[in-house]
Length: 461
Picture 1 (cartoon, rainbow, N blue to C red):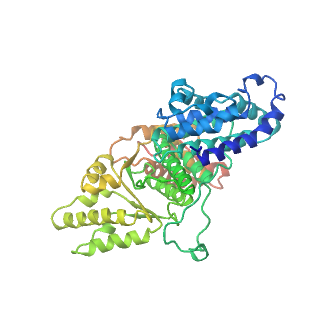
Picture 2: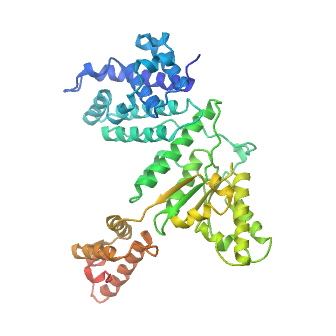
């Protein structure tokens, strides 16, 4: 029995990198009880690895054997002579998952020293610890959602402790079978954006906490699968296609565009462009033409992401139109299977209607297994969107204007016709237009007058 090589490499890197740092700093920060450092960096690595093994409560033999073989000799314990069943009985792993929720003494030491000296030791800890996290998740062929959520939970713990992300290991980008050599493959494409930059842009979006969490889970799963491919380990074939459910203006297209770039960075697709389409572009008026249109649209989205807006409309209509819509659905079902390695499809629309759409064809549910729900924006979130638009355009509200904008959002019925982010944009543009009508009546207006929206510029609710 051998320890998992990927986990062994991650642990070695953690220990070799952090041991000299901690040894040097342990006595230099006042108020730190170095006796609580749990002995040494090896014990810290064990705590990390054991916590991620425990996070889903499963404790597979492969995971436990790796702990036994990697840490038995290092810690000088009887782990080396134990087997997985013995380790389960000792309770040495059970309950370790809670360790992910609070910064360790060692991490606190590094973060405090960074704040005092301007160093980046906590960032180093972050990157090496995340290597262990992903390595544990890659030990078994199936990565559970509990493991992915634990990774995100630990990221939040690191952030609270002041350990920013730095250079997390980037899993390899496998080329699909038959891909063109790099020397001739789309040289005009700009470089893929760093994953850290894309995730920061996602996090900066107003609201959408649940959506962000789901995208992070999807991202982490792909990273683990890429790690397994690098090591020639089996990877379960899982669909990348998604359903985005929610009302208009809730950020579905924005997130789809970001997700397309994330997929490119992680090697799921080569180009990472987003192609948007809907029923009017897919369904033709004559027999046989609809399938051709659908295939042409998939061709445009090759090595990128295809967003089908209001996808449920494909199953609506009467008489011949409905038949042609169903032809589009049937063709989509075939193509998402035939081109699963070159096109990712996102079907978007109202929540209830999308559930009906998924039931329209027996193959849709298995090919679109995951639905991400986009909630309506709250009034406070709409205010943030309105203010962001103002910042970009060089406008700001005075106090009474801000109150009037808030009242306007509060007065809008949150039904299916509400435009969410689009409503904020439409209101902002209406306010700018009214302000322009007021400003032209002023001789030689000041910069402050040109950039300030007053209550008179806000339309009545």
